[in-house]
Image (cartoon, rainbow, N blue to C red; front, side, top):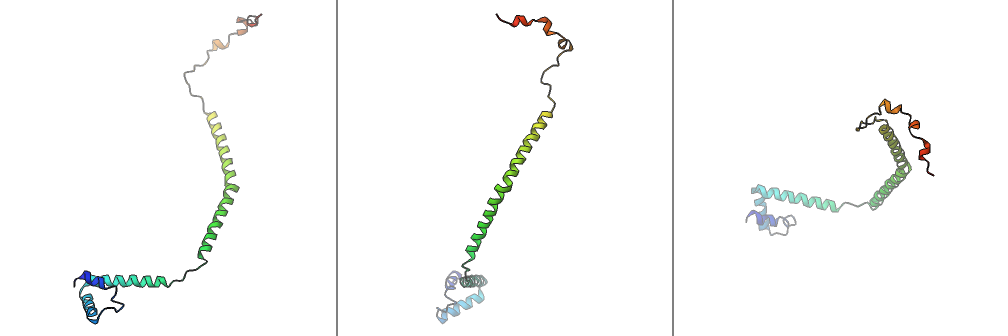
Length: 138
């Protein structure tokens, strides 16, 4: 027999469903073949793990406690955000807008091609040049 055939027989080997001749052949092959011995060891560990896991008892109240804790966290979050965080965000937004307005208003105007008014033009008396009577229509 080759290793593949022996490995197929490993499932029923621990149960004793084989004849004594087949059992002796499997045991001698396990002593000689390192790969099959490692395969068999891993298979036995997996079966042991599965059988131990089947024996675990489930706590029936675990899911109830977990769900209650999740609901408690949601209630705390819902109370905290509208109660404290929302007004704080509004106040911070208004304060930020006022600060930016003051900052932008205090920045000196950049010269955009506007020349200052010459002194001579500021000294002209417009009232003497034009009469208000000219603007009145009859």
